[in-house]
Image (cartoon, rainbow, N blue to C red; front, side, top):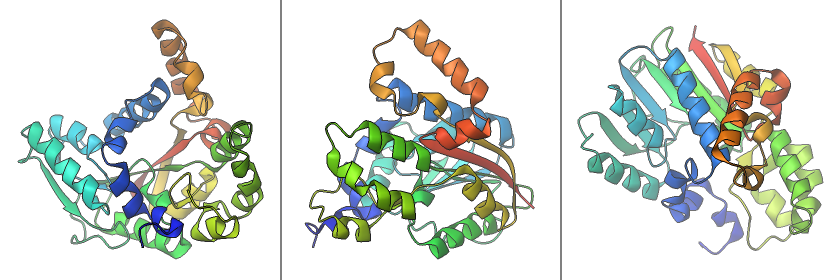
Length: 282
């Protein structure tokens, strides 16, 4: 039943309901734009000059379209039927059908042959939406399996420390979040079990596992992906979205420069809303 809170936090259902919101997310605020700008900076830095790229869990295709406009051939795959439909529409609006193919699928079971892609991407948190540890391991194995030898692999996840800080910061108007804190800290999950335990009828988020940066590194390296960079995409600007909208453009540029300068500091990576790891298939 779609009204069951446990179904509401299912990733496919959540992103079906979110619709255009996921496409808009990366440009709706200055803070969110930091995620996109820092991610594309690393894509520019580590991608080969050309080739075939997989955007696994790519939602409405924002990164896929950015890549296609730079000349890459891209396959975007997502679990949400609505996100797949939006991606197809966005691709068609830009006459990029010859560059981008869009299909529905699961990052834990990719429908592609071994060694097919020159790079694989899993950006914005799809891996975080796999609650089961074995499922996360399967997804990483798949990202490696379909990538050619020495291909770059880009994975960004949702950060644990930033979520804890955000729940504490939200306490004055979201005391239910504070009551959930001990369970989130213990499990690092926003799960069906958590919402059932706390009797949550209107979940505030989607099913999610929150990462520490060292956990992400270990997960990738255990499956034969040599990690070269771990970075915090929003860094010290995490959880300050509303405040950063109140400053002028010059001040925002200064903040962006500081985030870029600090992004590979291990402490900063752990503080970030989104943590990016860039590795290479061994």
